[in-house]
Image (cartoon, rainbow, N blue to C red; front, side, top):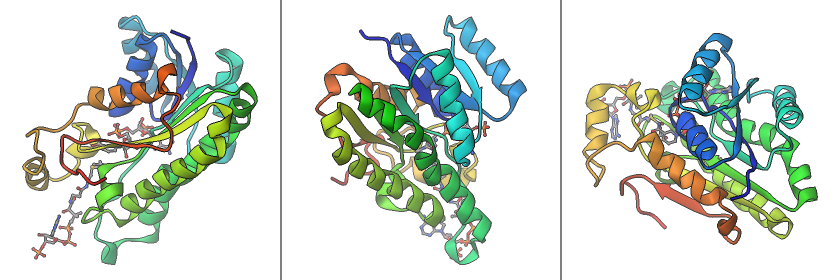
Length: 246
Ligand code: CAA
Ligand code: NAP
């Protein structure tokens, strides 16, 4: 297997940790960003205890200058970014008639504008080198909508619109651009949903359980493979059968 340089945003979070672990275990050189230095160092130590060395770079994906700095730092330490996983994300759930502009803007900045901020600094190099893998971590709720998530669903649907446009522009350059749309995964983000509401959601999942971060990491690894060179512009649902639109 060819060892590639992978940058995973939000890599210290629930799903991000599993993605970093999976890509590093496959032999890639992996980096992620952090905002809280002490928490990130603890996380890095845990990964080290598993035998995995993950590079940490400071930065907030909401800001283009910080995104550029992250890419520059990864390039300096590991080499040019060949795999980008746009995974960082947040929720600010509330019904739209109560939504404040701040709740809208924070979600659009973190979940969608971040995709511009992170991808813009890496795309030129990928085109020059004629190889790249860009993966958006969207959501089932970008596909089907969700009560209380007009902001989040708009951002997540927007991510896939980005994917299918960038895929067309870069197919001739050996770059694939794909989306993974996870269903409900048992991370802090889902645990923040009130328990009674969450139980009703789990009851709608045909597999009868929440997904695991590893379920999503496997989907990401699939798109990063050398053999996946002809798969571009796809939206892979990994949701336990909760939504089967096509
Ligand atoms: N369908 C229909 N009605 C619903 C509903 C649904 N899915 N969810 C809530 N309602 C109804 C309630 O029954 C209640 O009705 P009544 O007024 O008739 O009693 C009403 O909405 C409550 O509305 P409010 O505006 O007062 O809202 P609230 O303050 O109670 O909170 C909410 C509403 C924020 C949407 C809350 O229900 C919630 O957190 N829902 C979960 C949203 C969700 O799935 N978020 C996903 C987070 S994880 C994630 O995002 C990861 C991922 O990608 C999957
Ligand atoms: P999580 O555990 O809350 O992790 C989110 C990660 O994103 C954290 O590392 C967080 O860093 C980082 N992040 C947030 N805002 C950032 C910013 N402005 N700049 C840099 N990093 C930032 O959530 P998760 O469940 O792993 O979710 C990961 C992705 O999967 C998100 O895009 C989410 O929307 C998507 N998703 C999740 C589910 C699910 O059920 N969990 C389902 C579908 C899609 P800090 O620690 O610094 O906050």
